[in-house]
Picture 1 (spheres, rainbow, N blue to C red):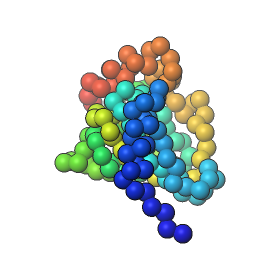
Picture 2: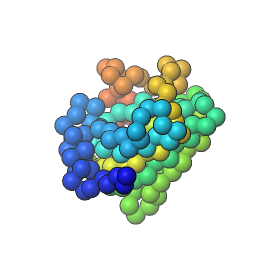
Picture 3: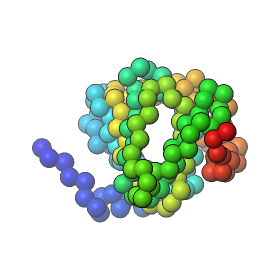
Picture 4: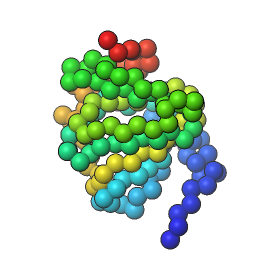
Length: 156
C-alpha cells in the first residue's frame, strides 16, 4: 500500500505544534515502535526545548531532513561544550546524519519548521543517563533560560 503525506496533513501537524505546550508535534510514519526503521515528521516552533541527549547504542544513528523553516543542530562534547552548530535552512544544509553516541540537540529558528527524522529501530525510550547531565530537564523551571542560552551559543 502506498502511503501519501499530503500538504494539508503536514500543515495540520504544523498547526498542532504551534498550539502545543511543547511547541512541537510528531507524525509517525513507521507502523510500530518495534519497526526496524523509525521514520517520523516533526513540526517544531521556536519555543520548543529539546534537551541535549545521545543515542548510545552502536546502531542508533539519526538522520534529520529539513522540509520547511530553519533549525540549528547542536553537537556537544561529553562536558557540554558546543563543538558544532549546523544551520539547516533551504539555502544551506538540508540534511544531516549524526553518528551513534553523539550528544546533540536542536534549536528551532523559524515558525512552521518541519523535518523528517529517520533512525534505526526499534524505538527505545531514552534512559536518564542518555540525557545530558549538564542541561536541565525539559519541563524544569531552568529550561527556558537554557534554551535562550542555546540560541546564542557558539562553538569554542
